[in-house]
Image (cartoon, rainbow, N blue to C red; front, side):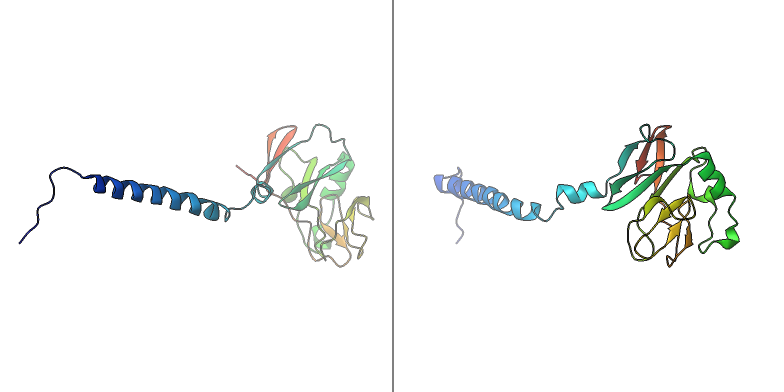
Length: 178
Protein backbone atom coordinates (compact mmCIF):
# COMPACT_ATOMS: atom_id res chain seq x y z
CA UNK A 1 0.00 0.00 0.00
CA UNK A 2 1.62 3.20 -1.13
CA UNK A 3 0.45 6.67 -0.38
CA UNK A 4 0.48 9.23 -3.05
CA UNK A 5 1.78 12.72 -2.46
CA UNK A 6 -0.61 15.55 -3.10
CA UNK A 7 -0.18 17.11 -6.50
CA UNK A 8 -0.12 20.68 -5.17
CA UNK A 9 1.65 22.00 -2.08
CA UNK A 10 -0.52 22.45 0.92
CA UNK A 11 -0.63 25.20 3.46
CA UNK A 12 1.19 22.91 5.90
CA UNK A 13 4.13 22.53 3.44
CA UNK A 14 4.46 26.30 3.22
CA UNK A 15 4.50 26.66 7.02
CA UNK A 16 7.26 24.02 7.34
CA UNK A 17 9.48 25.79 4.77
CA UNK A 18 8.82 29.26 6.26
CA UNK A 19 9.54 28.06 9.80
CA UNK A 20 12.79 26.42 8.68
CA UNK A 21 13.93 29.58 6.88
CA UNK A 22 13.19 31.80 9.90
CA UNK A 23 15.04 29.35 12.19
CA UNK A 24 18.12 29.35 9.90
CA UNK A 25 18.23 33.15 9.75
CA UNK A 26 17.76 33.37 13.53
CA UNK A 27 20.56 30.86 14.19
CA UNK A 28 22.92 32.81 11.92
CA UNK A 29 21.99 36.10 13.59
CA UNK A 30 22.71 34.67 17.04
CA UNK A 31 25.93 32.89 16.03
CA UNK A 32 27.53 35.76 14.08
CA UNK A 33 28.45 37.97 17.10
CA UNK A 34 30.07 35.03 18.89
CA UNK A 35 32.23 34.18 15.89
CA UNK A 36 33.00 37.84 15.19
CA UNK A 37 34.30 38.48 18.71
CA UNK A 38 37.08 35.94 18.11
CA UNK A 39 38.75 38.31 15.60
CA UNK A 40 41.54 40.58 16.88
CA UNK A 41 40.53 44.15 17.67
CA UNK A 42 41.56 47.10 15.52
CA UNK A 43 44.51 48.09 17.72
CA UNK A 44 46.02 44.61 17.42
CA UNK A 45 45.62 44.62 13.66
CA UNK A 46 47.12 48.10 13.35
CA UNK A 47 50.03 47.26 15.65
CA UNK A 48 51.61 44.95 13.09
CA UNK A 49 50.74 47.03 10.07
CA UNK A 50 53.44 48.88 8.17
CA UNK A 51 53.84 52.56 9.05
CA UNK A 52 55.03 55.43 6.90
CA UNK A 53 57.41 58.00 8.37
CA UNK A 54 58.16 61.39 6.84
CA UNK A 55 61.89 62.06 7.17
CA UNK A 56 61.79 65.68 5.94
CA UNK A 57 61.36 67.33 9.38
CA UNK A 58 64.25 65.36 10.96
CA UNK A 59 67.32 67.60 11.14
CA UNK A 60 70.82 66.28 10.56
CA UNK A 61 72.14 64.94 13.85
CA UNK A 62 68.64 64.36 15.23
CA UNK A 63 67.08 61.04 16.22
CA UNK A 64 63.35 60.45 16.56
CA UNK A 65 61.39 57.62 18.11
CA UNK A 66 58.31 56.06 16.51
CA UNK A 67 56.43 52.96 17.56
CA UNK A 68 55.87 49.87 15.42
CA UNK A 69 54.53 46.56 16.75
CA UNK A 70 54.68 48.02 20.25
CA UNK A 71 58.43 48.64 20.06
CA UNK A 72 60.26 51.95 19.95
CA UNK A 73 62.05 52.46 16.63
CA UNK A 74 64.94 54.94 16.45
CA UNK A 75 65.31 56.81 13.17
CA UNK A 76 68.61 58.64 13.19
CA UNK A 77 69.64 61.30 10.63
CA UNK A 78 73.39 60.87 10.93
CA UNK A 79 75.92 63.60 10.34
CA UNK A 80 78.89 63.05 7.99
CA UNK A 81 81.11 62.85 11.09
CA UNK A 82 78.95 60.08 12.60
CA UNK A 83 79.03 58.16 9.32
CA UNK A 84 82.82 58.52 9.07
CA UNK A 85 83.25 57.43 12.70
CA UNK A 86 81.09 54.34 12.11
CA UNK A 87 82.84 53.44 8.84
CA UNK A 88 86.37 53.85 10.29
CA UNK A 89 85.75 51.42 13.15
CA UNK A 90 87.90 48.29 13.29
CA UNK A 91 85.41 45.41 13.01
CA UNK A 92 87.71 43.15 15.03
CA UNK A 93 87.17 45.41 18.05
CA UNK A 94 83.39 44.87 18.00
CA UNK A 95 81.58 42.35 20.17
CA UNK A 96 78.98 41.77 17.43
CA UNK A 97 80.97 42.55 14.25
CA UNK A 98 78.86 44.14 11.54
CA UNK A 99 79.97 46.83 9.13
CA UNK A 100 78.14 50.13 8.88
CA UNK A 101 77.32 49.32 5.25
CA UNK A 102 75.40 46.22 6.40
CA UNK A 103 73.28 48.30 8.78
CA UNK A 104 72.07 51.05 6.40
CA UNK A 105 70.51 51.18 2.93
CA UNK A 106 72.91 51.93 0.06
CA UNK A 107 72.46 55.46 -1.20
CA UNK A 108 70.82 56.51 2.08
CA UNK A 109 73.77 56.13 4.46
CA UNK A 110 72.68 59.14 6.50
CA UNK A 111 69.62 57.24 7.80
CA UNK A 112 69.86 54.52 10.44
CA UNK A 113 66.66 52.71 11.50
CA UNK A 114 66.93 50.34 14.48
CA UNK A 115 64.82 48.90 17.29
CA UNK A 116 65.36 51.21 20.27
CA UNK A 117 65.65 48.50 22.91
CA UNK A 118 68.92 47.65 24.66
CA UNK A 119 69.90 44.08 23.91
CA UNK A 120 70.96 43.49 27.52
CA UNK A 121 67.75 43.78 29.53
CA UNK A 122 65.32 45.67 27.31
CA UNK A 123 65.83 49.25 28.50
CA UNK A 124 65.51 52.21 26.13
CA UNK A 125 68.87 53.93 25.55
CA UNK A 126 69.29 57.68 25.14
CA UNK A 127 70.83 59.30 22.06
CA UNK A 128 74.01 61.41 21.90
CA UNK A 129 75.30 59.84 25.08
CA UNK A 130 78.38 57.78 25.87
CA UNK A 131 81.81 57.64 24.27
CA UNK A 132 80.89 56.46 20.77
CA UNK A 133 78.61 59.16 19.30
CA UNK A 134 75.57 56.91 19.65
CA UNK A 135 73.30 55.62 22.39
CA UNK A 136 73.85 54.94 26.08
CA UNK A 137 71.73 52.66 28.24
CA UNK A 138 71.71 54.30 31.66
CA UNK A 139 70.42 51.21 33.44
CA UNK A 140 73.50 49.03 33.07
CA UNK A 141 75.99 51.11 31.08
CA UNK A 142 75.78 49.59 27.60
CA UNK A 143 77.03 51.91 24.86
CA UNK A 144 76.24 51.79 21.15
CA UNK A 145 77.94 53.73 18.35
CA UNK A 146 76.33 55.83 15.61
CA UNK A 147 75.62 52.62 13.68
CA UNK A 148 73.80 50.99 16.62
CA UNK A 149 76.64 48.53 17.28
CA UNK A 150 77.41 47.57 20.87
CA UNK A 151 80.76 49.00 21.94
CA UNK A 152 80.82 48.76 25.75
CA UNK A 153 78.85 47.41 28.68
CA UNK A 154 76.98 44.16 29.23
CA UNK A 155 74.83 44.21 26.05
CA UNK A 156 75.57 41.08 23.98
CA UNK A 157 74.46 42.29 20.55
CA UNK A 158 73.90 45.31 18.32
CA UNK A 159 70.59 47.17 18.28
CA UNK A 160 68.29 45.13 16.04
CA UNK A 161 67.63 46.26 12.49
CA UNK A 162 64.11 46.94 11.27
CA UNK A 163 62.65 45.95 7.88
CA UNK A 164 62.06 49.18 5.97
CA UNK A 165 62.20 50.63 2.48
CA UNK A 166 62.38 54.11 1.04
CA UNK A 167 59.23 55.29 -0.72
CA UNK A 168 61.04 58.49 -1.72
CA UNK A 169 64.11 60.38 -0.53
CA UNK A 170 62.07 61.82 2.34
CA UNK A 171 59.68 59.00 3.25
CA UNK A 172 60.14 55.43 4.51
CA UNK A 173 57.76 52.57 5.23
CA UNK A 174 58.61 50.43 8.26
CA UNK A 175 57.47 46.83 8.33
CA UNK A 176 57.22 46.24 4.62
CA UNK A 177 60.04 45.53 2.22
CA UNK A 178 59.87 45.09 -1.52
